[in-house]
Image: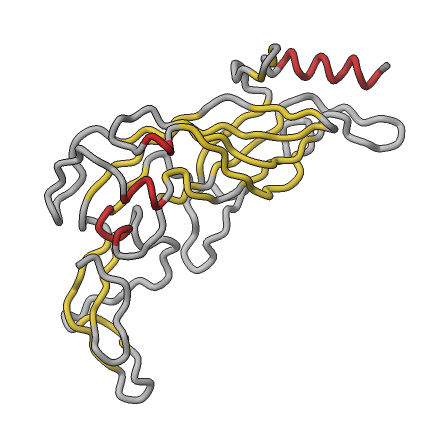
Length: 245
């Protein structure tokens, strides 16, 4: 009986109603999005390198890069409640994120979808956080964008694509959802990944090491289509790096 009463209270606090859960409170919250660190590309829930807005380069995505990858950090704000056996009855496991995009420029198949993740366990009490990285604007959605009127090489213009994300967790046998949090993504064509020309070839390794212009390539970025300006180069032997043109 104790468990059933507590389960009812949790459902009420998260706004669950018949037919589903309404995200109308912050008991289960995305506290922010973190930037994926170069050379690691791992969503670190303790990182304070926070990203509140992104940029996606459609030219780079069409050339083979991923869609926009974000890393939401989730926190369980329910009060700590541990039984005599040491079980945290308010603990949760993050299993997925729901994504909602209300934008006519985005293909219809990507207006509402769920991304399964394995972000791990969230202890109650508001001190434990979990994070996961996934495409909140998938590659196929970026390729299918319409009505952008982009100028190649120019900075983003026009309104961003606002992606709404909410966490999905399990608590015992219950599935719970948190509130949606908005993440705006600006769109450009050739403003993130740009072609710097023919690569220089290291005579010893026979590998392309830098564009002929002297600008270093940034192989350490996690997704070459988003956020950080990245030079690439082309070569006939060996094959060059991913370029936008």
